[in-house]
Image (cartoon, rainbow, N blue to C red; front, side):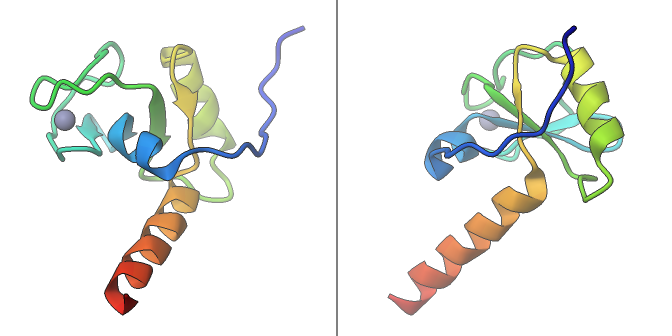
Length: 101
Ligand SMILES: [Zn+2]
């Protein structure tokens, strides 16, 4: 039986940032160039910067995001689901590090 289990895996922050499709209320955004209004159900790459999407995340993600994760996985089983709040933590750390150096 196939089920969804949340796991922890090490990723390259730059790779995720470059190939991430972020899903909002009605449409998706390219995390790389911020192009918005993308149809996240079917889009394979960004029409503006041409990056190939490999990851998907929801802006609404939080600790109760199992339903969102399941919905997005059903729509886009070809993309790895990323917890957006985790990504934001690492991006903020990166910004702080750049600011201090
Ligand atoms: Zn783009």
